[in-house]
Length: 76
Image (cartoon, rainbow, N blue to C red; front, side, top):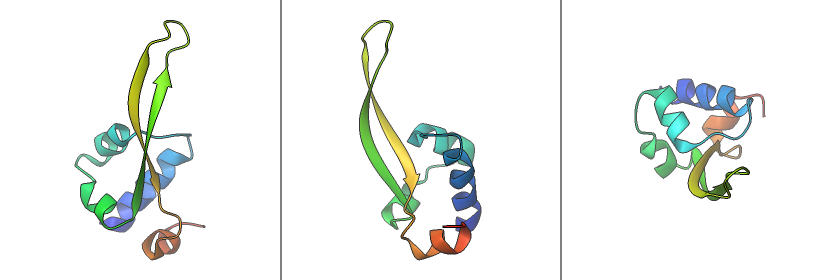
């Protein structure tokens, strides 16, 4: 199961930055366990709407490319 989710996130990352919400929506579940295991890393950022100047907090999600399971499941 973990390798399937690693591949899913790897595919999403190929499109650019990915939010935690997008990863969980694509996975159909919470990925808190993968965060706790160090497979996924979270970055808290602020997105600014260019048209309105409105600031929005976002949580980006990415693979920990140094984790052994991630290295085994991806080309890194």
